[in-house]
Length: 124
Image (tube, rainbow, N blue to C red):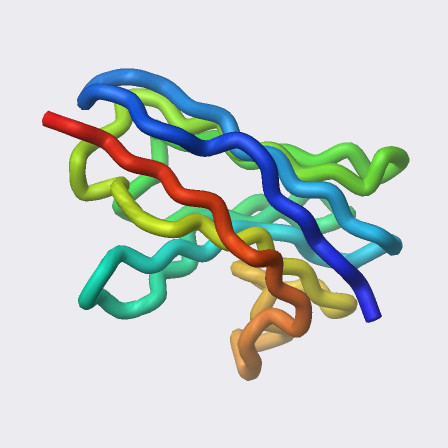
């Protein structure tokens, strides 16, 4: 069992920046971020493999940057040019398989490990 714990988040005005962090208790092939806003579907935000391959949702590409430290087993998400529609609970995810958004080869499953979530609120 791998535990992932998020930190960071908070409130910011539109156009501002925030950083999220995640720490994993064991090595993982993939780490990433999902988010869910009230009344909306889950959205895969970004992921990065141990091989440094990254994936981004179209809604955040160019504004968010995901990175990881394989030695420290940590994941970061730098969020710039934030918009009110970025408001959501953000969840760190991890999986033992490689694949965009930690969904394994071909995107066949949901990430295996999930954190408790951290709130990001962007006001207009």
